[in-house]
Length: 225
DNA sequence: AGGAAGATCCGCT
DNA sequence: GCGGATCTTCCTG
Image 1 (cartoon, rainbow, N blue to C red):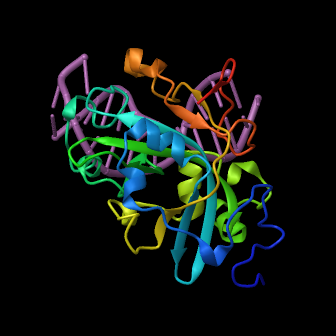
Image 2 (cartoon, rainbow, N blue to C red):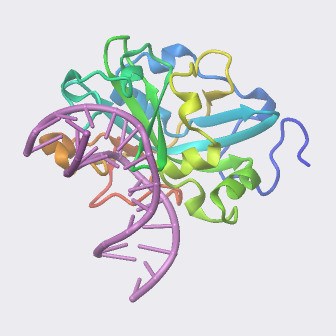
């Protein structure tokens, strides 16, 4: 068993991280900025889920910014406000969780000012703590990159679903982001939104180059963010 | 009221 | 690489 505030060998990554008992929850101001800025800043930060005495931590290695109502790729495109995407209009620092393809959950960070339907999709994390539980939920061994290398996969591994719709990440709940050192970030086109016309070409995907948990390597030459 | 599509994943070839 | 899974939401494509 790991001691308090330490990582086990199997949990260790090659990145410098704060001790487990000193995780600093990111404050609301982190989210209350322009969505593209938050998407970039979120890469390298820690996704933490503490529930029933268990702690899961993942290092965010890939995000995407969605900026409705102009952004045609966003669920808030055109200002269509429904019970499903309602959380996008809410205050910064809350979670927008949605269900797609009849079986997958995705998690977003609501950003900017209330009334601006902007959000950051968390597309991939590098597992850091709680790999055993993640592996059990994902029905695979903990050494595989498929554990958390996609937006639906990481939600399955972390047990994130409808129960987390709208929760306050900057409050006192068990789901939140924690601070971690900056890392290298590059941009790319967003994935799976080819229907969005010119908006599909925006470089609003942010990722840590070379990280094996990135859902899928970007096409073409990498551009620094 | 009905159908189509979806910010995906998985297993098979 | 490809197609099927699976189901909620939204618009009538």
